[in-house]
Image (tube, rainbow, N blue to C red; front, side, top):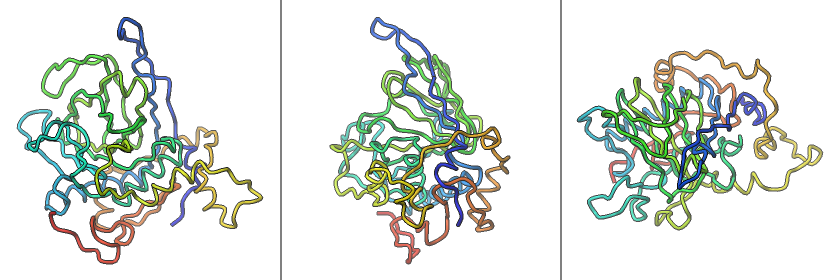
Length: 342
């Protein structure tokens, strides 16, 4: 499978870091959006289709009881704004106190499924492409599957997770709202000081005031949408028995090791440049133009049905949903068996 070198892939990424909205906080004016970064075109249309197909397959596994009990959750849709499905990997996170008395935050004695290989590959790209720093290599993620009218209410992410963290968007563009104080206008609707559109294939990084001073939310969506939030757990909050992904565990050291010169590079220069995570070159207008995408539902359905083996046109990390590279959760690549509920 062919792939672009990291600098070639990063050339298509457009980054915006100058978000600004002033609000009075504790008697002084503060830019509550400081620390936000929007990285567009991180995932190509072809890669988006593979990711969507992966998420839909994981949701199907969750509905069939083939994931660990706390990995998949899909509440009953009893009113507008309620019913968003979630799939947690790496750690079990409580949004509120549970029936066992565990407070909000990471539940250390509860197990969920580990990061699937495709999501681990996404996390690797985020670090190699300088979306996230090597100090925050993700070791957990939560997938949100929104149907029409689902939302995420105003909140600040728990400090069991380090800053920065990020969220990737797929299937449909949606706004994310920010504000020191937010007001519920109607079910799934909120009044906020600032709104940022999240294009498909983009990644929003949250740090600084944007992560800790301002609350954020996603109002009721008009179309089906998927988001994947990648975070690194605080070392003191990691679940008991947690096993980090070997590739991601070694990534931070690989990225920050002393740079090699071209003369001392190993023979496989492509592999060397991928490991080094070369800095982005300035993109030309032609490079920044994104190829028109076929409807993602069609593309994702084709991927799930095995009708396409198109190659990623812009990834330093190849994406694949083959049996060998994307085994069933809890099964070895060779076995291909799906575990039952545990």
